[in-house]
Length: 369
Image (cartoon, rainbow, N blue to C red; front, side):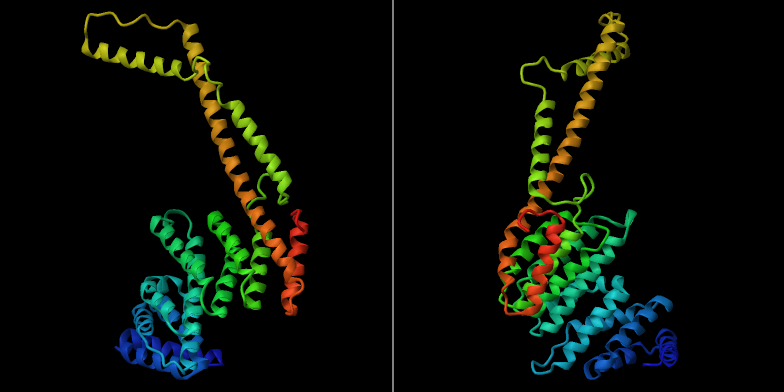
């Protein structure tokens, strides 16, 4: 397997045998055995199935193998099997996420597995599938995709409380990777920040260190840099929010002004009536047509109204953006005291991570730094 030339030729022979000579079932048995008994074969097997699906258009074998693995019972004292299967599942979800997503309902069973390595693998798979779905632009991003992305995020969120610290770490590491995606998932980012702040109190120092890392990553990739540069000073954002609130209040017409609203509607009604009377062909004369000045006034009123409502919508969106930024900054404020306690941790890597955290939030002008 180490020599690429030999590996590729072997794969080619096998692909032809599977595709044209009915070798699929034999191959399936061999793959499952290779995964159970040889640690070095987990990634090559994934590579083989990927080539078979991509170049030979034969995805059935991958589906069958995943189906069989998801029903496999592992012996509790067998460490090798789950580890190798985990590496295989992770690798295949990197290479061929579209094949894996079809089998996700079955693979999700592995989240209930005793073996933490298998749970880690599924956590990683969820991350790979979110990445794949978020990269599909245009017409493909349908409601089902949103649903799937949400389901995978739900898994990641609940696994931050997995009983095994390795699984909790893996979930956090997956989040760190997802921060680099083009799509920002603002709601999920906020939740991730809150959960990372909670994980700072985890009893495992490894989880705490990774939680600090995730907070740093969330800060350095935060989506609030569009309007006012990327600083995260609470005072400044709060002042902006107050300014927007003031603008919004100024735009709302004070109660008791004879409404801008009614005039344009009245003109609409009259013209509708005109049509109705004309259609009926009744001899009755329609109401006196409006003079040009009245029409002009009505048009101006309608335009002012439209401009106001557009400005309102714009300001409301800006306000929501400010509120989200402030909520994120508040999480950093609540997390800071905990991280500063971790500066006196007995674990060296954790202390260094905590120092990094304060360096980063200081660069972003977070007041607690």
